[in-house]
Amino acid sequence: LTYSNGANEGGGWHLLANPFPSPIDGATFISDNAPVDGYYVLDNNNSKYVNSSEVLASGTIDVGQSFWVLIPSAGTVTFNTTQISATSGTFVREDDIALQGTVGLRISQEDGRSGQTYVRMHEEGLPEYQFGLDVYYRPATDASNPEVWSVADGDFELLFNAMGDIESTTVVPLNVRSGSEGTVTLEWDSSFPMPEGICALIEDLETGNVEALGGDPMVVALEANTVYADRFQLTFMNTPVFESSVSHCGGGVIHFNGDESELWNINWSTVSGDLDGTGCASGLESGDYVLEAINDFTQCQVHSTMSIPEVCLGDFNLNGGRDITDLLILLVGLQPTNELAANEFLATDCDCDGAMTTSDLLLFLPYFGTGCN
Image (cartoon, rainbow, N blue to C red; front, top):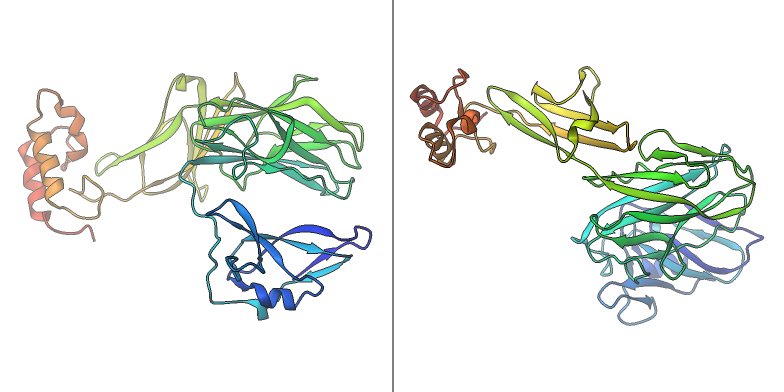
């Protein structure tokens, strides 16, 4: 694999990433790519970049890890299998439990040239720029490419914008640069699933045109090679969420729960497409389902996938067997307390007659202590 630094671009700093599904040895990469004499990687422990020549620097570049190299003049950088290493790196970014999800927006023109920007829902996010959470936007060297980026407080131009948590992120201002063709298409980057409980709208404040991400793309006729500031924005809104339940007698049920859920039109289908329907679904067989909800008033859209597990008789806690926990659940259902009504335990209706009786217990006992298989 070869990365080319165009003959008309000259030298400079370039952000690369390990393209192999395995780590590579940093020293071998350097020796294969003279006159590159080093690279910079992010030390997550100190939130700073470290040169490969430093003692603390990782000598291994891990799977998918990005790093900076300085290329003094036009040329190429090559990755090859001789650089593959069995050693793991030490600067790989760990999972961020405060990250609630990412929304991607893609811009393109008819000849295939494209760009993208991202908004991250993060519990520690703020409207202003934050090192480690936000990533600066850098314009493409080829002005023929259309580009889109967000603007944070203080006029920081960002490729990744962690503006706030999922509850507080409402409006994200965007700048758009049209490419060589002028007309651009703005649409959802589906490589990042929409975080649960929100929808996003792309709005053209000049024309009033609004499109939901995940729905029809927005096509806008612009002047070629022109920057448009304060015209476009992403607007985020809260939505109901899909939830599921399953029982031995009733099969799977998919609900759409939340405020004003009755205002949404719901479509669902199996992943294979051999079964579909509208509205909340019940009596579903085990399998994977694709779900969509559309609000015609706000134009918001919600997309989700759900798995309905296979349930066997007596496995009330869905752990694959009939154990003491299942027996206790059944006994509570047979003798509900003052706080719990009997109809709240219909999932323990073993004989599927719609009532909780001792016959359910008698049907359960022969299976007690056995697995579902």
